[in-house]
Amino acid sequence: MSQPRRVGITMLNSMAGSDLAEALDRHVAWGIEVLDLKDGLFGKAVMDLTDAEAGRVAAMARERSLSVYCLSTGLFGGDLAEGRSAFEARHLGRVERAIELADILQPRLIRLLVAQSAGRGRYAGCMEHLRADHPWLVEMYGRAADRIHAAGFGATIENEVDRCLFRTPEDAAGFFEALGRPERVLFTWDVQNLWQMGAFPTVEAYELLRGAIGYVHLKGGQCRPDEPGGTLLWRSGLSEASWPVADIVRRVVADGVSEVICLNPSHGQPRVADRWDDFTEADLDFLRATIAETAP
Image (cartoon, rainbow, N blue to C red):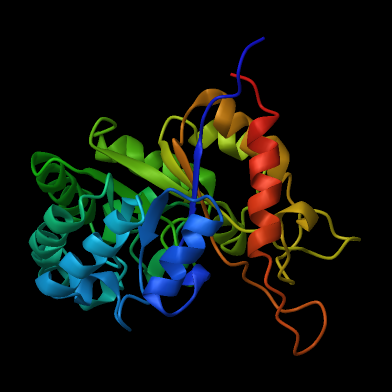
C-alpha cells in the first residue's frame, strides 16, 4: 500500500505562547519539528533581533531538536505610495540584514511580503496597476530574490490583507509570471488573506496558483451560511471553516507543492461576543488527519 506523502506542519511561533522557551517546549509537545519565526522573540520581531539574540534563538531550537523552516520578515510589506527611493531603502536595503540573521538561524526560506497600494482599486488587475504606476517593483523583488538565492536560502513572498496588491488568484499568478524566477522565489499562499481581499478559496483557485506555490498558510474562518462564498465574518477552526479546507489540503499534499504547511490564527470576529477561542490544537489534529489520509 502506498504511504501518505510526508508533509511537515508548523505554525507562527507566537501561536505557542509569548515566552519563547515555553513556546518552543510547546512545539515539541505538539510534535512540531520546524519553526516559522516571526515575532514574540524576546519581545521582538525577527528582523529586530541582534546577532546575540538570534544566536540564543538558534541554540534554544537546537536544544529541542527543532530547526527553522522560515524567517518571516515584514520586508516589502510597505505602501508603494512612499515612492521608489524610500521603498528601496526601507525594504531592499534591509535584505542583507535578513541574510545575516539567516546565516545564524539557518532557515530554509526567507519570507517577503506582497506590497500594499491604495491605488490598486483603480485597476482591474495587479500587473496593470504596477505597469502603469510602479514599473520598478517587480524588478526590485527580483533583485531581493536573487540575493537571497545567492546566499543559499529560498525566497518566498506572502500575500497580506488591507491594501495588498493581490486581490485575486489571477493577480498572484500574473505577478509570479512577470517575476520569472520559479527556481528562486515562490508564493506563500495565505488562503484566508486572499479571501479577505475578495477571492473566496476554491480548488479552482488553487489550480491557478499551483505553479507558483511553495508554502501554504492555513486558517479557518466562516461567512454567513446563507451566503456561501461570501465575506469572511467569524473566526473558526479549520474543521468548521466555510471554505473547502480538506479538499485544498489534499491537493496541496498530493501535488507536493508545499513541503511544510503553516497554521495561522484565524481572522474574523468571535462567534460568541468577547470569547476568543483557541483553535490551535484542534487545527493541528485536523490538519494531521487530513494529511495522513492523502496518498501521493
